[in-house]
Length: 460
Ligand SMILES: Nc1ncnc2c1ncn2[C@@H]1O[C@H](COP(=O)(O)OP(=O)(O)O)[C@@H](O)[C@H]1O
Ligand SMILES: [Mg+2]
Image (cartoon, rainbow, N blue to C red):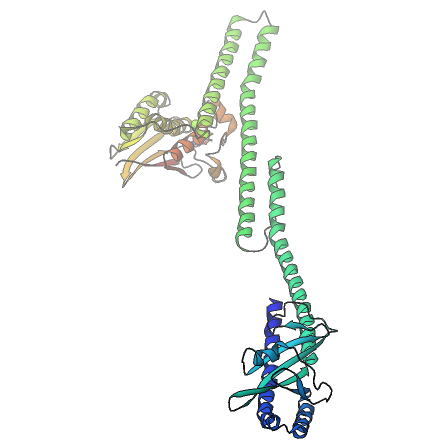
């Protein structure tokens, strides 16, 4: 780039000089031709000397054999001049010519070859020739030679300063590239370290969010992901610790009861039977917890698929109500069914049966004797809406957001007495979500609770 610019400027400088020299030479050739023809050597000498002084160079008139006949320096008379610019006229028949030479080694140089390094110590001379003609006949050559050192020097200094600028520009570009690559690679390196730490199991890593654009989005996404993973990890740990605790409680009870039986061989038969019955109840409870856990875990491992079939949801609701009416009757509770649509749907009947069972079972369990449980099923557009309302104690406001959490129970002792595991509603939630539906609860302490399940009917 720099060199081509220099040669461009060089061309311009030379073209200027060349045009001037050529014009002068040609003009002078017209004046010199008649004097040479008339062999008026004195007048010719005067003309050359004056013009040479004016133009700042040397003027010579050569005969058609390239021998000097007149010289403004009066030195070279009779010398044969072998210059390509002279033979261009005498041999090739051109009317004029121009060339640049390095004096000393006489190395020729064309105007357009500035790619070669310029030798500062060398002397450069421009030769301009014009034919001396009389009525179209070439009778000699006018040769004007002038030092072009000034032009060369300007070129040299131009080349030097251009080289300097070029180097400076290249260095600046490199510096900028370095800074930019730093700006880009640094956040990537930070992110890589973060991912590596996470790979080693540290889920608490977050990377700083800096800059803008894709890198910023990447950092934000990474942080969101690691936060979710950390939360997931925490909830899994919580789940395992809750599950262990729930399993341990009946085991501890059983151990105490068994030790009593073992260390009191003369225990009376009635008490022993009572203890054994208690142990049996704890075993049932363990069974219940484990089967609930298995249900939950099987839903967690995304492999469980829905066994869809076409059935009437209304049938499921009245079936479950019928099954639970035995328990409700014992508690002198009334189950009121209000079914306004059969709600035929394409879904997993067994799973939805469990949904209805769990909610209705809770309503019966947590509503005192003599209570009322109302079950309403309606269809709204493409959804089946099931509402199960009781007039029991309701759920305190602060517990409402947690009611669907695993193992969450408002009153642990009471719930355990009634045989609850605290997993029923979280199973309900999972099953409903699997069906693309939703479940919610409205309740006011002391004024009963309403569970609402909305399920898409999913039919063609
Ligand atoms: N209809 C209801 N009325 C009052 N409290 C309820 C009702 N249904 C659920 N709950 C509360 O929500 C908790 C969680 O319910 P669930 O997940 O089914 O567990 P549990 O095994 O204890 O029944 C229960 O322990 C109970 O405190
Ligand atoms: Mg329950």
